Image (cartoon, rainbow, N blue to C red; front, side):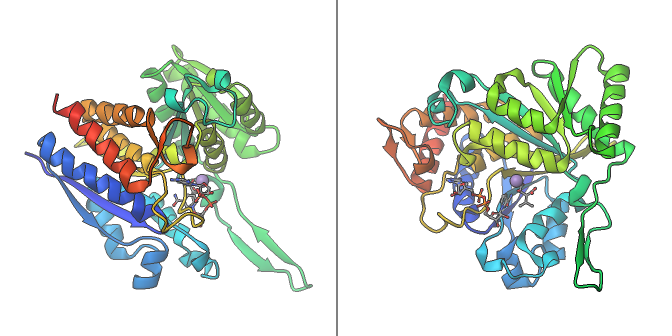
Length: 370
Ligand code: NAD
Ligand code: IPM
Ligand code: MN
């Protein structure tokens, strides 16, 4: 049987707490479904900075490049606030994305039926929500040069970030979005700010051309990103696939996350291009949320975003569709009766991180051994 190599990068704060629940699931996968995952664990973020002097070491980078998939917890926290910009925990995540060339970040926002009342929006607005944000992840203002703070010598400084997009970067993320839309409801909404940004104008032009030349059977709609944010909270079910740049995608996906009730619910997949010979992609899976310093160490974090990220790994890296479906269904099942504090509701039992993980494991075992 083929061995599947997973690199686990738990990171900081609640990252390791959530990752521990995925490790339970990996063990059950091997035992109950006969798959053969092997895991290796390495440091990332602040934990790596403290122990190894960098937020991701070259050795860890090599492990990430060699793995079939990377599972990433979360990084960052107040402990590292004073650390040099290049060495801060978040820089480790950015290096992983850049060096693994993970240009397509898939951030689904699904309203689980049991959570329709956990959202800050009314039930009738979010019930049945199922949208997918496709965020460009290796370009734009996150990586554009120049990126610096210059001393102007007159008591003033100038801080510069640069938004840059080349043709190929927009083409490949547009294709990724259209391909995904084809497996869903066939609609793509592209978001940029062409009214003020040259990169927005060009983004719009390239996405329009790719649609016209290659995906004319699908529906393409354009929205200014600010208006898109407004539409996301006004009538989120109008969206199927949203394709947008790195920074807008970061912000819009946090908004989309809260539509579903909690940041603790949203998974993501970051994918590279398919290898021409093997068809395999580099991939990293991580929750949308961060290290949640305010609740870290208390055993109360919601591990479902991390667990759902593992389900995305099953789906996108290993084509284990039945297992991914079973795991996602197990999450929906347990939400009927047990909840972590962030999504607590009357009539449900309040549990901690580990108990929530156990509940999913139990349900998953039942589902796959039927
Ligand atoms: P955050 O996502 O860590 O937390 C925001 C709020 O959501 C907090 O109140 C937190 O308690 C809550 N929350 C988040 N995940 C939760 C979960 N699983 N269960 C229950 N509640 C949850 O964002 P932040 O506070 O803005 O950032 C904290 C640190 O995390 C910063 O250093 C930031 O840079 C970093 N961060 C890292 C990632 C990542 O590693 N991918 C993503 C976002 C932020
Ligand atoms: C995310 C995070 C990251 C980002 C940070 C931690 C670098 O907010 O994954 O959404 O800005 O992309
Ligand atoms: Mn973010």
